[in-house]
Picture 1 (cartoon, helix red, strand yellow):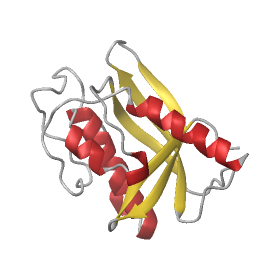
Picture 2 (cartoon, one colour; picture 1 turned 90 degrees about the vertical axis):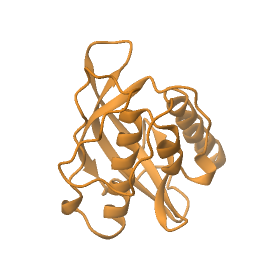
Picture 3 (cartoon, one colour; picture 1 turned 120 degrees about the vertical axis):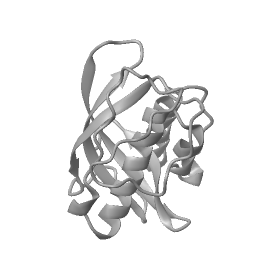
Length: 166
């Protein structure tokens, strides 16, 4: 039963990963508070730069996870395959062809949520309220998902994303 739920979570991340990616510039190791990414040729010139999470509001593991989330947002905005892959854990690595969305903002993070089923040891979770823009739509949508992270190779990596956690 537990394995089945984990497989469902991993399946959901596959769907998310398959929705985006193309070529772009390499992403930096972190993003300064209040900064915006440099536009690349592949970025939509009409799209507003995303709002990043203020890293100064976090410390410890939470800060590491926020840095990874900021790099993840930047990779989607810049449509940067290489930067995107650097945010993924080894277990979550998936090839994708193109990015079909980008994150406008990560509005609220909740590290206190205890998902059910309980993730394996070493996995940290955060519920994220965010705004996204899909390439084929003009409107911006509000979303809420749980992001799972694992500490790997000296930094926090995205391990899975799910739509439910209770």
